[in-house]
Amino acid sequence: MASGFFSVSSPAHAAVAICVALLLVDTAHARLMHFKAEIENAGQHPQARPLVGGAWARTRDLRQSMDEVVHDAVGHRHREATDVRIEQLEETLRPIYNALPKNRNNAVDHATVRYLLHRYFVSEHAMYIKGLEPGGEHWNSSSPATILEDRIPMYVQQLFEQKLHNAGFNLHEVAVFAATIEHILHKESNERLKRAYELSNFSLNQKITHDQLANVVYAYFAITMTQADTSSWTVETTKEVLRKTAHDDANWPSYKEFLDRIRTATVGQMGALGFTVTFEVASKVIQSFTEQFGRFQDSGCRRMDKALASAADAGPGRMKLSTFYNLGTEFGEKAKYLDRLGALDTSVPNAPRMMIANYINSAANCLASTGLYSICCIDQCEALLGQLERDIAAPHATPNKIAALVKDLPSGTVSAPRQLSDSLLNKLDAIATSNNGHIPLHGRLFAQWMHHAYPNECAFPNPVTARTPLTSAEWLGETGDEPMYTAEEREKYARDSRVWEMTSKVKDLSGGDLSETLPWIEGEELVAHHTRASFGHELRVLFRGLAFTGLLFSVGLHLSKTISAGRAAWWGVSEKAKPSAM
Image (tube, rainbow, N blue to C red; front, side, top):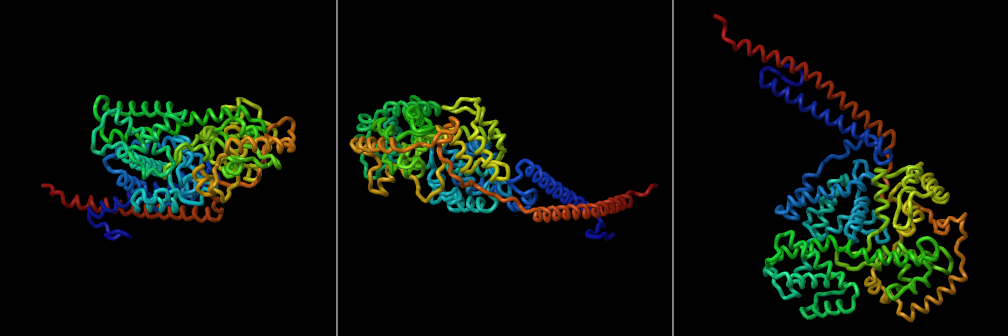
């Protein structure tokens, strides 16, 4: 018996018809569930992505293939540990990921991934990864995948690039990318460890004692902290550098204590205490050092921060250059270098002021630098913005929502609860007015507002320029000019600064509101900007979806009749097959 699309003339044909029907029902259900998720997501994030359309825009899910190639890159032997690490990273990254603007695929694009990963490595490890940090540019000026170049197999990099520039990354894929960067960091650390073995006169396959391991770790530290080329170092050079460090660097005792503590703890965790250790054990020690050193050295940043904040005398979060240069020999960066760092407030004519948060977070205070990253101070504004992201869980919020959260959000120098000034509230409203009633959390104007609200923690966001901030070594290499004043130059500049400051006038206070003394520069710069799809586009996609659903219903109804006929045919065959009654 023929019936429409199928000819159901046998039990086998009937079974095939049933399977096809079930498959189409499953497909329809999946489409409808995806459509339902689109609508729910649009309700939560009205400007983050279109109402519909994204469900069909994502034509290929690369999660499995991304996982596979990353495991190939790091080695299947470490697969279980890598999987666990990716899960940990997902949980760590989730709050900021949820608050970031998404594209039409409900994913983050390459600029947003770069921004997210930069913040993660700074807040967790005090690492400014080269290629992730903005460096005075827009976040979309380059792809974060470029940092993988020549460090992992080409096909892995190409997969990341393809995914970033097409659909974007979901949370899992961002975590995979972060884990890949961590793997590269550990790989680079191992190369320096091999050099430390060589400069300690040990071979890589040689088992060494704990005292010998200590010397290897010290040699590794010397290589890492020295920004000069170490390719010509010998065993004797390394010993001399360490002797000089112990004699000249007042921080060496605390560094040594930290290195010894990391070494003992890691060796103990690996069950190697009391035994000679292999290169693999030494590698684990260095991995622990890499992960923890940034937070350890940030204690020095906090002491410096406290000293500067207590001496602030030129408005919130600011100090006169004459005061800065009189604080001690460690504070002697030349004014033009401070300007290149973005640490000078030049809004008062002829009397530049040093912005404390900008200076603390600048490249001038990076303690160590490798080919891949620099160890710098942890941005204290990160914790404040992170708390707002957790509370808001969206890319934007109303002025009232932000004001209610910030008045109860304390910092190291701001008590809570507090009454926000009229100036702060008016600026919030102004930002919202230019953004359809909502304030983007990840733009320059809100960062500027946070600087006004927390001037000692949040840096002033200078408008994007073509001038990349430089470390002191990079400044010297580019300009040929020493970044620091000599003692005599510092004293002269301090005297000259006092003359300028006495003849300059800081903006009058408005009702005692100190934030009114701070500059405000208009001009928004968003991390990512995704325009909402037009209403006409949404209707076309909606009708297409409804038409597809109608088609499935029609086919399903037709198949239902076909299946009924098939069942009848089946039972007819069965009846004929029965033996006749005697």
